[in-house]
Length: 501
Image (cartoon, rainbow, N blue to C red; front, side, top):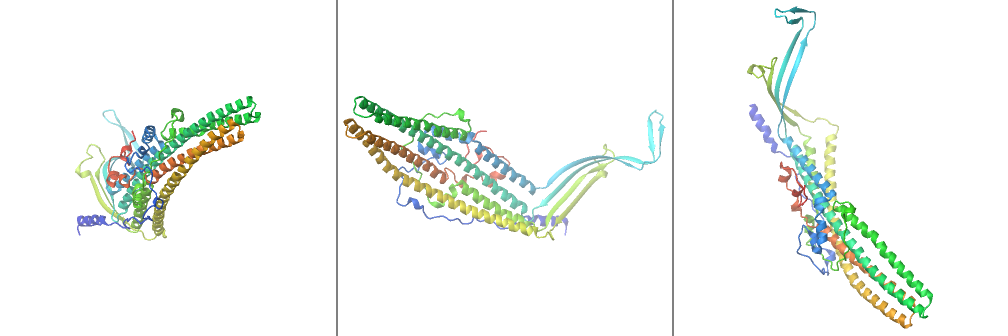
């Protein structure tokens, strides 16, 4: 058989791919969300920008802060750099599919022998050394080529695994973005809760100051004892201290927001504002869509695919590895006539390396690859279950907190009415000051609880959006063509990033 026919036959084997082809394993998916039964969100937000999901809160300042995540958040920048590295690994692996060519040049001066020698003077006066040995030069210019044939698909399986891992890394970028966005929104509403709490304490400070003034008037008129005045002063001062303490948590939330947008805490100041009264809720679609909308699920799925390809890589090592090599060049003792037909060198060769005995090392490698795949499948299914748990948790929280808020609002109104009634009775002398104090403390407690419930509702709303994947879908992941292309990543090319260079 002619060498060219053999060569073509070997190349024809390049279509063979050892190992299992990837099929996405099933995941435990419920038919419907348990916590949605019999409950309709009060403010459903079916229409909103899936990318800028925080627009459902209609807060311009929150929008302004959130849009700085893609520009300045360093955790996100780190994730994007990891994606660029993953893409470079793919392109590096692809180089193994093509021949490697290189050129070499060499000069060598060689001596043979070295016995007695003499020195003579030529007619032109130049000294010439003579010796019994020989000294000569040799110049070589040569091109070399080698090609590891991917007969069993080992290289292609590795490339496919690297592509899957690059998509995994892109999903990690989306997950980092969503996590930072949700963390910022949570810190923002917690800060607004502290502002609302400060308002509650400020209003109660005024109320306790009024009560102190009334008590002092009653004391000077001889109607009450000095103890009532002291009690009223204590309550006022205690509430003032609680008002001051609110500033600690507020400052910490403000600092957290600054870091999330890539600024030193000293560079950000947020003016006080009230916690929103309305809680928008994004109703979840069918549970099956969660598999496409969560970046962590997409990442876990891509990891499964990558591990599946590595099984093929391990299996291919059982088969002979075939390589071709060649060289072409020139070699001569003088550089002036180096490139000439009589000085030509060339060669063609082929080699194979077949495993015979490795002490079970390769069998163990296949077992390990399959175990890694099984672990990735388990991780994927656990990620799916955790995702459904998080959605159900936040749906339950929103439903129950809405009911609690309704009852708490009634309790606050009743407490306020009780305080007004008790003060009037105290002025009339029909009740002692302890009655007024008890009602005032109950009112303050109810108002603080009311703010805390509303705070929990806003935080649960953000957590639900995060549990539903924000604006992500698995279609946002870069495709194989984009990853294997020659254009390296820029932040704007990965899962909808708006990051600036």
